[in-house]
Image (cartoon, rainbow, N blue to C red; front, top):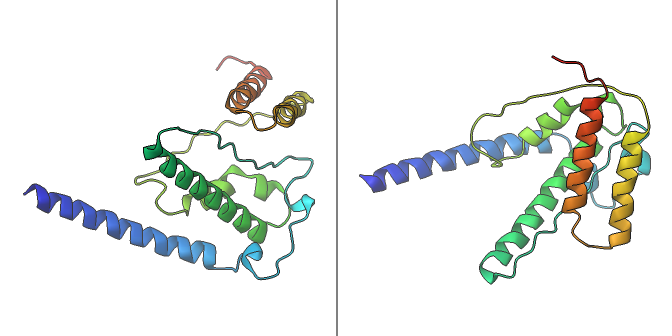
Length: 179
């Protein structure tokens, strides 16, 4: 009986996976991705970032000395980089200008939601939006970049965590009204 249940679950999981790959293929393949074409030009700086600020970087620094896990960690790193490249190429192809639509979280959620097999089950989205003036964000971000350059390959997880904490503090203290 247990084998029948396991086989049923495996069949369900495979059909779920096949369906998601078909959806992903239709989504990402509907328009030829620019960077995937032979002889594609390197994207210009204004398509990657502007004064509104989009920046992509990968922080993959976890390593293990255990040979049983090092291969898995390397494969996961490669997969994450490939997924990031696919998302970047899709955004570069379908949203070549950095504008409000390209910076909209719903645009990104839609793209990431079409990558197959990231998870099984529904997605929930929560949001918070608050605008504030000042240079604190850029100064804090530049501080993170400066630490990255100075440390030359050292683990940046702690620095990135403190950067996110500072961003959260700035965001929530900008207009601290009780709700």
